[in-house]
Image (tube, rainbow, N blue to C red; front, side, top):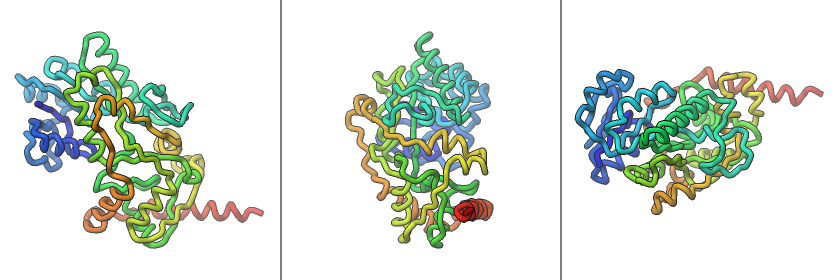
Length: 333
């Protein structure tokens, strides 16, 4: 297949690009060239926001699939409809499982679960994008497939609950130093983390798949873990015992309102994903990387690469202040 990926070098898309090239597909990457381009890909250098330039770059091309990994708002979707309506046999929009109803009416999520998230603008924008694309599909036949990732990680990311602006390293550092780390709620809510290599297998199975046109599909692992289990396995990978310190989500949001979307709009909800639809469309799909395996690879990457060990003293102070406030509150009587 002839594929055009807009982005193609990120946490999710890099694994997809690599797999597609291994399978012998012709892969074009449209991006600004700020990150390394996967060997074997054809680079179209340009900013997707420069519509005139992109129109020239793709002139004369017919792609079996166009997938945009960096669309977040309805105006960006409108631009893509203009650009690709005549040259894409399938257009894949990457949405998010955060678009699903919050709070959930039922713990098990299928693609028919309502889309509604009053806590997170990011999720509401993705919902608006989905609605616009599905309207275009119904009205003109625009060949859209909507894909909803959940919490997806790779060898460069350790999925944690609460971290600072410099990423996850400060959390790992605290665990290694035997310090407590913040976990929302009581740590017993169920969560699903999916390795990008597993996600790529499901995603590639949808490409060029006529049964996926006009459909929305989420791609996740079938493994569900509590947040306490997630932190235990992170500690195991580091060779120490993690010490989760449980704090109410509402309290964390009161201290830092920007965390509302990621907590009440996402991570504080117990969610189990039903992947039956994906497995009907991609019969050989199976997520095979358990979290205890994948997190070891991620931890190894951090420990072997000092350049990504970005200290975050501000987040460290925030963590200590939250814990101190909670401990003082316990002494009120």
